[in-house]
Length: 193
Length: 145
Image (cartoon, rainbow over all chains, first blue to last red; front, side, top):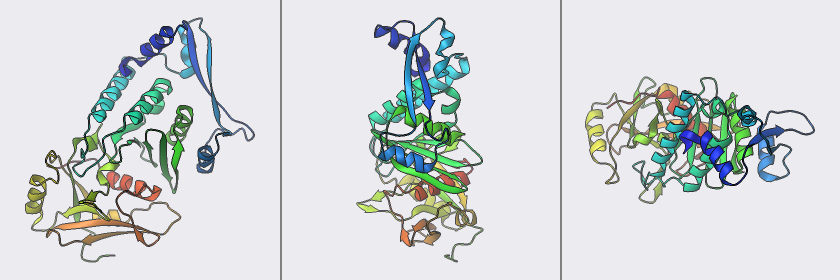
């Protein structure tokens, strides 16, 4: 499914009776005009649903497939398809882990946590997601580890929330953010920059 | 600092799940604290490779997993000085120690204290998440059998 997520997306859209449309993910800022999320702002997101950062899903007529660039998913090369295929395989592996998979009583990975990752994959840019490695965590969450030589960052995804940390000289992060795909992607992008 | 364990020593962290190694990397989650027999650990278990009993202790650990379905995957190496030198970047007071336990001749634990309190299993602080990430980094993503 994820290996062909682009086609899956088209199928899903057409299957719900909306042919020739695309989803456009757009970030918008207010007041400050800044795009970058600070840890304080991320905390605000957690506590206040009226976050200054918000996203809009635009559904618009398609004249050709290139307009899918709203979510930057076209040009599905074999490499990208392989990546999504391997990610899907990895998620399947994690979903099969049983209690105690770490040798010490770790919890099975939460089904909804896996679905949250799938939701992110559907709309995130390949270049963003390819910076992260997927691992299981003992508390039943999925841990995304940033591939970087200059800073340390990780994200834990649970069924209905996520947490993250980043150490770029100073340590920052948030332990409890309600899971929301656009907010998650925004933070994932910021951490991966 | 516990002077009994020298900075030059190499410590081994035994891995029991292949899920901790993926895409050429060792997961930070391989350095979690766990609850054993209802008691939360306060130190990350390691074996001291420079000790005479290391191989014997490693064989014992590898063949006596705590759960029946466990299987030994290998171990990764960390230098004691590098562990002690980890900078978590936190504004809180943190202290890293490597302590002999006596549980086995070559057994030791890596502990993290935040504001004077030892971190224990279940801790989800940013400091501990960063700590296990740093430990994974020190392993250089190499697994030994």
